Amino acid sequence: MIENTERGERTEQSDIERVVMRRVHLLRILGLIISTGVLVALTLIAALWGVGKEVWVARVFQNMPHSGNLFDLARFWLATFMNTRLVVQILTLLTLASLAYLILEVVRFLNRLISP
Image 1 (tube, rainbow, N blue to C red):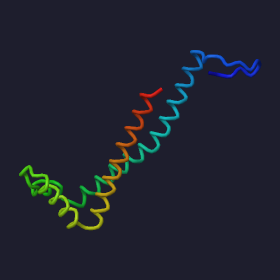
Image 2: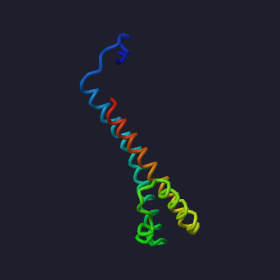
Image 3: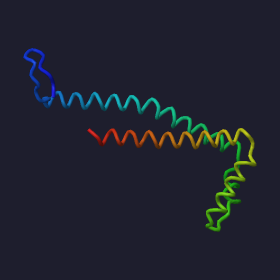
Image 4: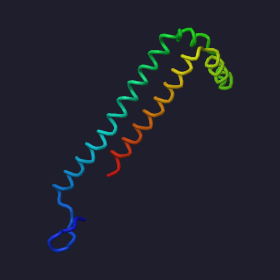
């Protein structure tokens, strides 16, 4: 409802106003998503690149237990994380944080896109 200031009446929103406001909201949402989303994606790529430069990732996957036991797998990844250098630990945490934030941004974007 839009208030008509001349007569103090409330009128329904016209089709043109509805389309324009939808586009304004979409541009606002895209502006918020692009700025943080791009920064987080670049951070994720840089952190993954750093881990790849510091660690021989193929060897880590070769040494990983293939038993299917989740407890063994969790213990392996914890031991792997604890026995690496500080740089690799920081890059790993940065990768996980960037991935989590990127997933959150995608969910927020989809939520805003779906809801009117």
